[in-house]
Length: 87
Image: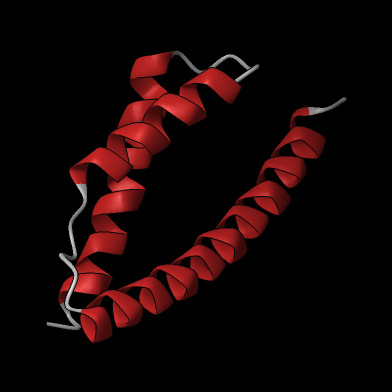
């Protein structure tokens, strides 16, 4: 496979990742609306850690635990910002 072919595959994956991240953001927004309606805390650190542990356990690729945690902390931080706007 050529460099150009690999880059095209990466670009395609990036587009899919972006679509999935936006879909995730929509779901997080729905969670935030439910939490607001039910008077629940927006930030749930135990849920965050549980999710991170689950993701690390599911990983079968090249990414080390530290990278998975860093990536998902950023994703969750962006999601938390969406939920915070509901306050």
